[in-house]
Image (cartoon, rainbow, N blue to C red; front, side):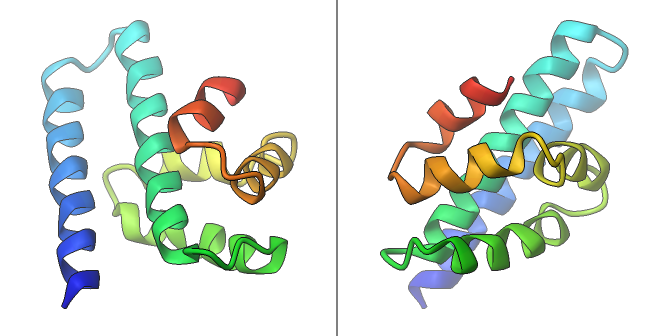
Amino acid sequence: STGEKVDMKYIVAAILLFTTLYVSVGDAKVEDQVECSVCTIALSWVENKVGNNRTEENIQNYLDQVCEFIGPGFFYTCEKIIYNNTVKPIIVNGLEENETPERICQQIN
């Protein structure tokens, strides 16, 4: 199904991200890039799942699930971004307003 193909795209992106992180551990600049990439992947997944139903409740529902999807390698980084009480309203508002995941992640970084 189409959903499985879309999810696979994010899985491949996460694997590539993990490979980059594994090769470059310890560099603060790389850590920022990883956080930005995790944010973008997570919000792209949420955006895809929410579709045209961009209500606060629907967005919150998928935000609560996204870090499980990201997987154990990036779970902590994802939680640090997504569950930050200062950042979460910015994410929800950005998605409600149809901003791109990249733009939202730039705003919160």
